Image (cartoon, rainbow, N blue to C red; front, side, top):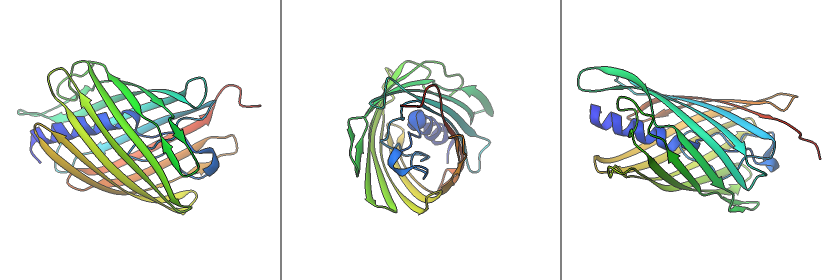
Length: 250
């Protein structure tokens, strides 16, 4: 992968992870339902539950990586959710590699549909011009993503994404994606994610199989590690902490 393509993929992956994991479906607790890596799920955060998400993408055959930290909060109930994403990346340029902060994303998502087998939650993100080096666009931008989650059976769930990212310099990126989650056990899942990224610099198709598992503690804390490998990109490491806060009673 060339340095130009590497930078484009890194920036696009960072933007896609602006809301990279979403809240746990109460009907599925304590199973894992909110911990995908590339594809956004359509379940908003439960009231009085906060989630802290870390993801580390390593780029194969390159001295490059991208780390993202996302924190998600319910806003006056489950219909509305606010979150932010902080990316930090080490990317290669023409003369070497450099490390810098990417474009910080502030995200709002609305739970449009929340049925037994179907969930829809469109998201709008503002990308702040905080990037240094080439770890982001470095200017104010917007991203829209439409996640749709469909439960096929008790052991098979699919997620579908379509969106676009826009910045004034016409660096528009389009994204389409889908994933299938196999609930091998409630606390152990196998998944495969497929993402298409389209931009002026070219198209990228990413196929990423992975696994995730959960530790459910008595105090309500759920810890979810995960591992994946995106073909032609590299390995990915995931870690989520989700727990109640404030008043959680009736």
